Image (cartoon, rainbow, N blue to C red; front, side, top):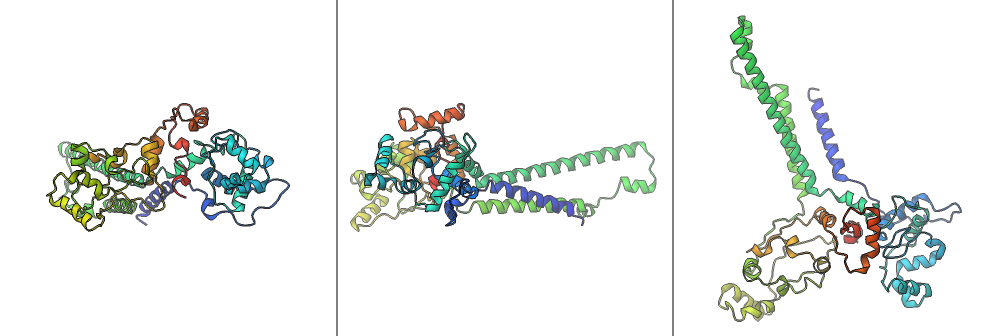
Length: 427
């Protein structure tokens, strides 16, 4: 086959980018659970497969508050199966609040010891909980499987999610540009060499008729275009361009960056937030205290517009909404899929994130549009780069000490606090 090397190269290129896009595979235990009946009493220790399943569950659900050998938010868990009966541990993990309310002495003692900080409930089956306990029994001391923020439980997920969909598309763009540049350089170099040789032969050699025809041929560009080399290069560039276009289109599905719908009332953020310096919190009253940033009611608009620009056609639409007792049908701009949990106040109030960080220069927009891509990779990168303000907050004391013991040079970021764990946003 004439083009066998070309096809081999394309197949290798496709497999390389497919492997890069897939990243590391993560255990699917959280979704599929542990097969019922997998737990069996064994004198020699827990089953290796069961402990492996518990490893994934522990890292995805427990590692943000517990380590095996060090106290973080909650107690160290090494040896917990010798201290507490298995039935007690299953009840505690599934619903610690119920045990505290029931008056269980050990449960109440733990609750009081850790400043009455409530442990979340987990809807695990008995086998899933037993797999976590099996992992705690068999995990090596000081190994890479140690729990806790910043350990492999968080870093592994971060690595798997580091490839934002657009990143592979950028590599394809770069590869295509490099190939085109290399081809242009090769063509120019060959033309220069051919011209120099031709001039040399014409000036210094007495050429035979057949050689004259070879050195100074009549221009026949069509024959050049029909050569296997030119055809192969053209096919290669075409296929790479097609792959690049297909990849970018496929990876943009569900991404609404720059989405700018027409609203029922021509409201200008540039006029209100920019020119008149009205604080975002005045209209969006729940941005610092709720999971969602609310859309302001028409009554908030009327605080000013009962006196200002009452005759404006746009303001009359607000009056019409109030008179008919109907809400204004604003078009939602920023949409997250239902599978992703996002808490607005956690970012604005606790994290101190400015509105412009996600929404862009909102004070300059006459018509608001989606400024950021809002993809998972974009969120994870922000979590990697954003340091946490832990000053004066005792909740972080043990976490910061543990982090400094592992890597004192790296800042304590959101990822250090478990901000790259799947269960933080998907559960």
